[in-house]
Length: 231
Image (cartoon, rainbow, N blue to C red; front, side, top):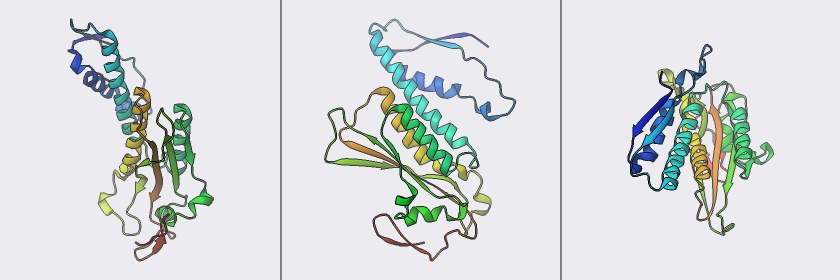
């Protein structure tokens, strides 16, 4: 295996080159018991037009951040549901908020009692649903107007009492929407991208399983905004 690799790469391709290299470097065997970490080769980009080195570095940093976000989604989507469940996923989000130094709230279960519809999804799993809220403010300060992005964090979707039969395999990836939200946050923070207004990132985390307590078709639950919803 080579220790160093050089690519002839024009400046306008640097961001995409960095994305491709870092995404390809993620070893899918990392979850195997016998996996041994091997050092990746150093990569160099060569082009006579790299006169503005600061711009080249910015392009590389941008690509590396995007690749890190993509790999975060891939890793979270690969984790089995007995490891990435409501509790552990919520704890991970809180740890990321602390690492990224941004406001994050894990809504207390007492408050979540008003969100029957979200809680009902996890009734069959034996563990309560979670709601995580990240917050970003513009560099200029909080705004009266606000935006919100919501990413579905369904750690596993068995289909509930109806069931998915032979289509159940791979349903651990039903939390990909929430993982993309985390990746978006990571890329924005790494690249120093500002938001135009107060922005919230919401991750409702649940697990739809079969069981005696699972919600049923015909059940009616109250959503957080007071709406009555029939399953």
